[in-house]
Amino acid sequence: MHERRFNPKHLEKLDNPQRRALFDPQPLMSELNVRGAKSVLDIGAGSGYFTIPAAKMTEGTIYALDVEPKMLQIIQVKAEEEKLKNITYLQGAMENVPLAAGTADRVIASLVLHEAETLDQGLAEIKRVMTVGGLCFILEWEKKESEQGPPLHHRISSEDMKKSLVQHGLRIRRVHFPTDSHYCILCEK
Picture 1 (tube, rainbow, N blue to C red):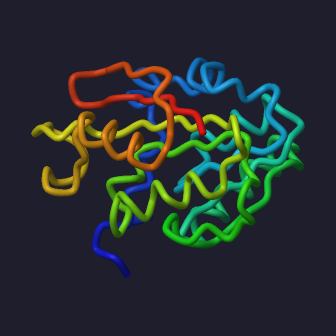
Picture 2: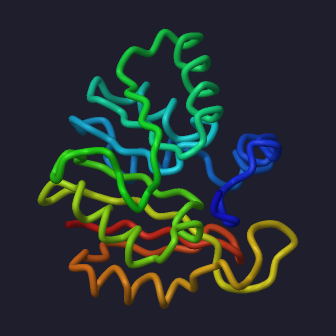
């Protein structure tokens, strides 16, 4: 397994009150305009932190993609508890998303692109699966030391991310910094 991939043993870090206080999924999903989406791809869906709220906000299909089958099982249990029937579970890597080109109106890449084999591969796949006019929400760790998060050498600076997005033909609509250690970028194909 790729040494950067999330370890399911650290599940409690994915969904805890501190994270919810910093990154409330509801306003972030509103910014992404999930309500009107026909299809949403949650890359590295993890415990369903964004998958479940997105599924509640739209009748469209939510694709929960994760390389780890245990994470998809966790989302499935949560979806069954919430009686959500619009989630499709995809096991696979972000560098090779098992969806046809132009499938997703909306893409969520939350704290996951730093785990890609290369950022170029991750962004190329995001662009490939997005519809024309589709939106992508990226939440990442800024490339600076902090008490939590991945090692510094795995992080992608906001400036490098912006340059890479532009190189891949994605238009940046908004950039903001919810904490000193994180940035959010909304971009469009």
